[in-house]
Length: 166
Image (cartoon, rainbow, N blue to C red; front, side, top):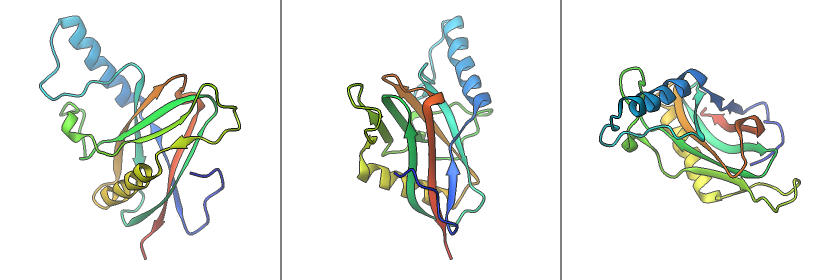
């Protein structure tokens, strides 16, 4: 987790919000609410403080290096990977498709602005390695980002650095 720039032999991939997919999932929630129906057994509905993000992999042979993460305010951001190539136009998101461990970064409300972000290092390392492993079989991967305790998408910059396999 650094704020430096990536060396030239590395590949830094930025998480991008997928606004169309986030909106489609929000429409699913509102449709269920309007009709009074319940979600399917095991279905994972998008919560109001969540959004769908994606990583696009230009190459599939990658080794995880490190995270780049900045949050300009206090708050907590949780990142949950989605394990299979999910086709939201054909299937609903199911809880069994969510990866563990999740990634969590935070800054407490009483921490000064210049205080470095906190995170669970072992979980973030394993999470980055899982992303690299899954990149071997796909060109895009989806994630749920949850913004809590004052964090918002506008205050977030998040990317992950990989080194290409040789």
